[in-house]
Image 1 (cartoon, rainbow, N blue to C red):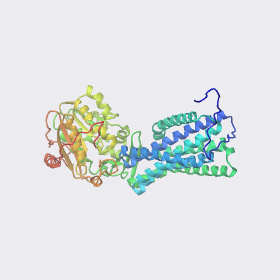
Image 2 (cartoon, rainbow, N blue to C red; image 1 turned 30 degrees about the vertical axis):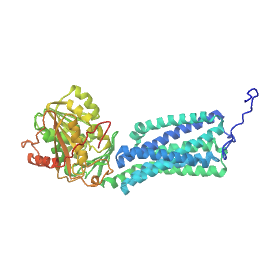
Image 3 (tube, rainbow, N blue to C red; image 1 turned 60 degrees about the vertical axis):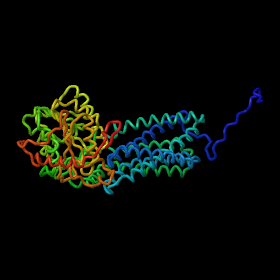
Image 4 (cartoon, helix red, strand yellow; image 1 turned 120 degrees about the vertical axis):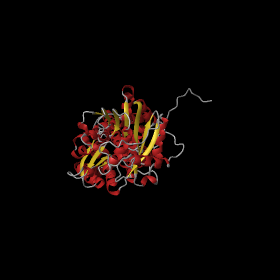
Length: 547
């Protein structure tokens, strides 16, 4: 039986071998020093999350398929953080020097990561290996921060491990919140991805190096201090040079991607808009890129827009809704009909509309439709707008001129729920025309769109338009997902749908200005399309996207 009447002395647990137990000699009171360490944790966490979000955003933009890129970046980075935590054990005997060296390396890698990924894409044509490498390297350095900060804060004032960990993680998580909000709402719209990453690296280097070189300077030998000063000065010089040259670098890299005739390059709050072509000349030489994808080519856009719009106009068409199509080209085809009373264009990015209004070549290509009093514009997400419009507005024709369904942000706009909202916004006898992606190279995606329209209660008439001269509106996110996806598209796939009956495919021969479309070509294309129909494809829904 244990005798509990005699108090026993409890011995402290032994310190891990190699750990520093001597209290730090600080230039300030311990309470102030502890607050400075927690403030550094806050700033470093914010910087680390900015690096992570920048890799996610740039990876999705350059490579495509944002779900895959997010999974790759997050999983690699979390794994690397575990590796970094283990490697931090080697710096326990010199935690101040180790932390400062890690922050200098993190500032350099994180600050230059956006430039390196963009350079890899522009000149090598592939940025996936660079994305994985930077995710791993940055994750290792981020993972090494907390163990070393734990040692430093314990040297200021000893406290139980649970309390120290709680304080550090509280500062870390709050800093991550600030960094996560600063990236989309401050850095990205004001300075862009390249300069934003460089400025974040600068803050990281100043705060991380400044903490050690001032607060823990007595823990460093003279040689160690000079090494850290020289390293941080070099890092800051590189980041400053990168910031000064960022605009020139971006212009050179953009020419490598788009060619030498970049006329307009604008980063809106939604996407990057690039117009290429000679400053003067025919609008047929114009190309419009949205986030690096060729969305309009002046050489063959008329084939696409005629096939999209005119089969839906053979019936009542006084009120027309165009979803997407901020370039004004689908509206141009609609407004060929003098009996159209109103056209509503719902475009998420007001920058596209502004460019279509003001750029001389793009305005010439769309026929100056934004000067037509029958045309109205709504700058809103099409899904959200339809949820309200279905209760107040009805249309004779809905034209879905949206990006390819294989582009991840567009997936919800090709869902059964979206088409259900569109059905509610149709007048009796109304038609909806949908761009469904290239049939020849992505037949499964095309027929999934058709299956989804039928699941929403619509009767469908699938067809296509061939004779493509460019990669306009071509294909899914940048990364091919199969052998067929790497082939250049040869056609555009469309589906015409109605609630009451299968809509007939024909074109009014009296429509002014038609250049390539005829009833005979439509019906021939429809017969060819039906030969490729697979059996039993399920529809795409919001909880289960299938593109």
